[in-house]
Length: 258
Image (cartoon, rainbow, N blue to C red):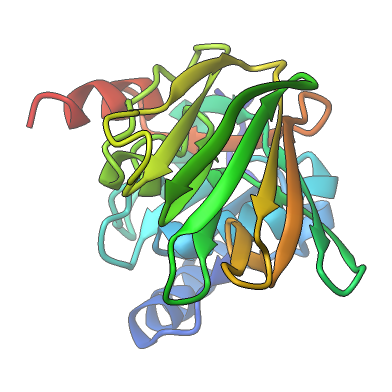
């Protein structure tokens, strides 16, 4: 919860869609506008994708982000309304998210480093299924996974791509990660694994020229990868705010009883 004050200093950010830009104009006229580095809170206007983008772009500021939904799903967003925003911000509850770090080594020798709040995913980039070797903390745990892809998801991202791939929903406070295959062909019935948050995951791509694979950390991708290493980054903190009673923990529970 923010420290009570008459009017928290707000920086509004909006996605480049008409509904978000219209909301931006109305809210700035009503509540004013501050630079991100001078604000007490950043209000993101858009959908979940824009929220992820805002968290990434402002991670060095240690300023909480409060989202208002101007998109579709809005799992990470609060309901949009123009009234009583200052009071909502004062009463909002804060959650802290730690991202995943991805380091991908590509066929051409490039290394791609990126952060992911939701998940790091690998997927086949050609007509044939991918072949992956999986190691956890330096020990090979699966010599060969034949699949369309695989991903490692945080608790915050467990209801996104991970859930669509039939992975588990994780409690927001759980110190675990989900490793989930996408359309696993062999082992056919393998459903993935739960890993300690401290685990370091490595995927090695087998037959990379015949079966090319790409990797994506949230929205940043690496093409034609040879290997991908993934681990949590507890030293990086993303602060996200929700209306009381509508935080991530409640949303994750509600998602499982629809």
